[in-house]
Image 1 (spheres, rainbow, N blue to C red):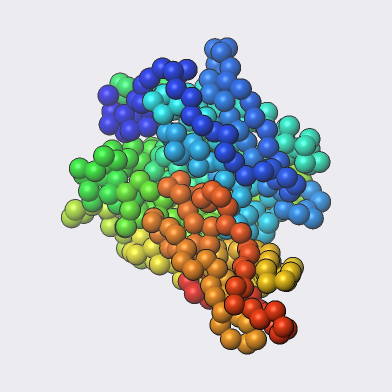
Image 2: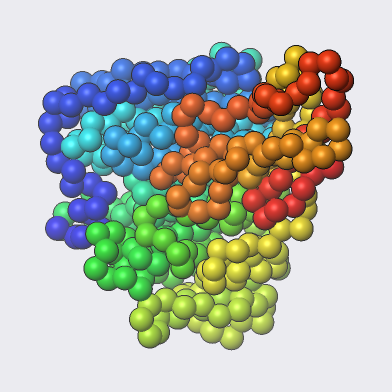
Amino acid sequence: MHRFSILFFALAGSLFGQQAPYDLFPPADPPYFRVRYEASTKPGELMFPVNCAIWIPPGVKSLRGVIVHQHGCGEGSCKSGLTGAFDLHWQALARKHGCALMSPSYEQPEKANCQLWCDPRNGSDAAFQKALRELGGKSGHPELARVPWALWGHSGGGHWAGGMVLLHPERIVAAWLRSGVPSVMAAEGRPIPYAISEAACQVPVMCNLGTKEGVTDKTNRFAGVWSGVEVFFNAMRAKRALIGVAVDPLTSHECGNQRYLAIPWLDACLTARLPSRAGTPLKPMRASSAWLAPLNEAGTGTSFITPVPAGNFAGVKETSVWLPNKAIAQAWAQYVKDTVVTDVTPPPAPKKFRVKANELTWEAEADVESGLAHFIIERDGHFLATVPEQGKNPFGRPIFQNLQYSDTPIQPLAQMRFVDLTAEASKGHRYRVIAVNTVGLKSK
């Protein structure tokens, strides 16, 4: 069997022999909404239960699209999907474009075959679209059933997102595939390959993987990922598809700092493609804005050189990395070097600040480019504390909500709350809260 297939699809086991605990999740009170479907025993329908949560930007009159954050295979990754819609950084991207943020959680037993959900032809496509219709009814936004999709997927979720591009290219703004791609070439042990249509080639796609997934480390347990990505990329790019590769120089299968390129990349694609009038087709990407870089297999692995405008590219375009514009090309070049993507914009200032006795609470939106790292609390003009004292993220930059392996917040969700245990009851204090993003820039 092909090694790439083994990584994602050969976790064979009894489908009904193990039930994972999927009953711990944040409450879905407005602006959050949730639906859940039981497993089906009918051929061709989804054989796992699925829990779909969605966040609607408060105040939005009519949604322009939905951003989907799709977890990977295995019990841990599936459970991590329960908090995907609650991620403040991804919400910032959704809010900017008037989109909902959706995160499905497929309740896959640990040893079951995850191809039964991550191949959308096995019922997860139909369940996803059913959830959009029902969530549209619950939220008062029936347009959810019709708006376009921007997809992000990790591991098996990358297979799912890429498969959806090939099945529904007319609905998809763009897709970011982290450490997983669909099968487009026939081979023993692989799922039935997808066909690559001309329409699918017009959808921007980025393949993102860690260097230890077979690029520089050929012995890692995920070393087969690169060969799968290479097959998919070459097949798509040979047909002039708008596809790129971004190798994370620091990681293996974990998501690392990828969101600091993925979110700006999706931002650029949403800006370019979302129609100004609801119900009209997605706009094509402007060819004149594209930049290219060669994908050069040399030395111990894959290396990249500085991208250039597409009209100035002197290499072989059929094997080049496609990038949507100059700003993303520059961010991409930084990311593949050390993942330190430059950001010069401070985060929005906190709002709705409240003080009750010695308890402080507030609300804040994340910075689209760099998210939220922590908050600084000042009392009477002097530093008092940081919230949290230290963000926890073993896979990348410390972040306010903390992150799991599949790029979703840890439960219980972090609260914007601080209790001043040294406040003097007889003295009136003045407090300030300052937001800090993950590159250290402070809000007003």
